Image (cartoon, rainbow, N blue to C red; front, top):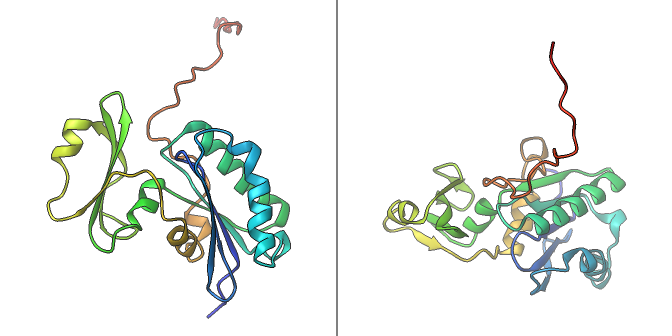
Length: 203
């Protein structure tokens, strides 16, 4: 059985900058900043601090894990870009974990994740246990999501993942089946810039 790689986890999907570091001896160290914006300015300094105070550097990392959303579009881009950049620079795997799956790690048994997505809607997914989805992550009208809550399950409505649990999970996942691709569920509000584009005429 191969040793667990030193793993860095990044979560910027919610109004926090959360980092987790799984060390070779199995200990987990974390860094948490309560911020809604400004992730880009802080993230690499916080990573350097977390690595430094635990006696490791980028060369020691064996993989990077990042949440993929749903969540803040800007926050997700920053976290995903940082994770991919570190992975590319170090030549190590980067693992993506849906934020809804990551949230399910906060319950010991069956759970229902229901996050307010605004506009009267909710992100919704049911789980048989931690990281054991029963349904696909979906965007539903709030009333329908509330009616679909599975009785007897733990209801998770906070958007803040347990970063220590995330880094432990991410260290075990197959990178080929868990790419660091954004999982917006709802399309981004930004529309393609087509106003200045001249459409081709088809003969």
